Length: 104
Image (cartoon, rainbow, N blue to C red; front, top):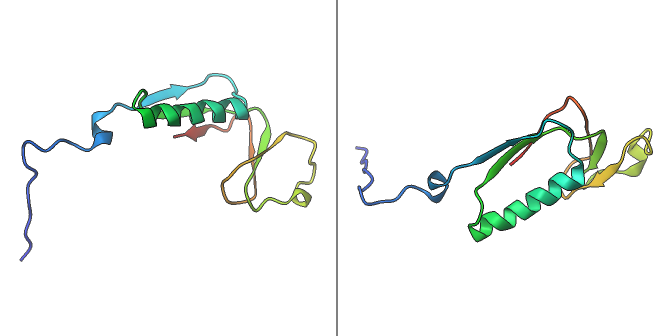
């Protein structure tokens, strides 16, 4: 026998269900440092309760992000595009015009 329960009428929905999510879409390339800086500020504002969560769709100018396993010797043309170290796993990832990135 499976027992099911119904939510009480006075129970509030989860916090995430109470807050709207902001959507942003940039029409021109956004620099990597600018995007990361904005998102870090947003994280603090969300934690303080002064801003909603945000999904931001954008494109970067040509660049590489370097994960924690990236080795400089793996880049065939290291001076071609800027390289930005990240705290994520993995190696190198190319980002550039025509490739939409989603920050959440």
